[in-house]
Length: 316
Image (cartoon, rainbow, N blue to C red; front, side, top):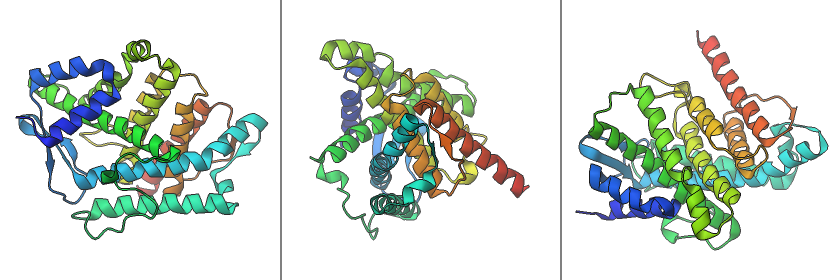
């Protein structure tokens, strides 16, 4: 029997990729996933378990929600600097953004959002957590302002990606595929990514929407879901474990698969998200010229890798 959580997940996936609605229905019929919202607990709960279970809790979805708004603030903060560097050929360093009061205010908002996300991760429930000022709550529905509306749309698609990843775990277990844990994580990432992007041309033709803009929007949502891994995963586990691949390698797979031009908004959005994580973790990054938005994303991923390598060397 369908439950409220199951229906909500179906709705968010179908809204994110309308062209795959029939396939989603067939997959549900074939594999009978059991989606349930559980009681809040410490940590981050969005996972596939035994017997076709896909579990999540309200607290976890609030963490995802707040990350969406942190990402939007980061996009507003860093994008002008990235464009200025690319246009003028002047080098850019994230430290340069703290010199103007407006930028300082935005950066403080981002920091406050990350603090609340971390507080939620360590809390038993959302009760007692002070909700960040100026941020609507998930139950309030879609915000009417431009920034809030953009965040809402990207959050819906990012959530769809996360649930599709977990649903693929259910499928693989039902099919009896004997992938090792690392391979399975990559396969689930690939499935979720392809579900949102692979037949996007069909939707563009049916809807009349611009294909490039559709690719960018869905790609930005997948980027948001990928950055979530950097935010909720302890830094000590960014390089992976026996059950999960490195976080950077998973983002790199998205970079290789997205299929948009080097200066599309997908790259700018991903770069701004990476910059917010780099800033919050105080990761060192050189001042460089932004030649293309894609190339700058690779520079940022390289900086994170270098940070992890140096940290590992020091630990030894």
